[in-house]
Image (cartoon, rainbow, N blue to C red; front, side, top):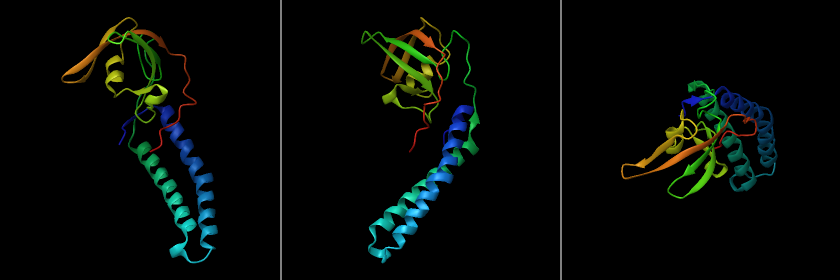
Length: 167
């Protein structure tokens, strides 16, 4: 289970739980009730699909509640000149002679396709706490790694629109 969450992560999870309990649960129960009214349940695809959706919602609620219950709340603050959680970081990849931008987040919000990397990923763990112009070795495995240079750190990014990853 993901153990380290920021207060912002927990707040987002609580909002999702509330939405799922008040809106999605109500809709799912209504869909099951409506499908049940169509007759023979053994051959009623709508009924089975509605039950599956209802159970998936309940499972997600339990999952989020367990994550909150077992979480260790960590701070998302860092010094002005160092890489921390919820910071957007521009990295220069020496091997490729390219620059990429990433946002450093907790594991529940990571989404590499959106440039959001976890503090537990090879890049995230290597650059966390580092400073602008630091040359950092990113160890991928025992046989391979590469160097990046931290070019820019942007701390003024809100995370209101970053969703908690759904499984």
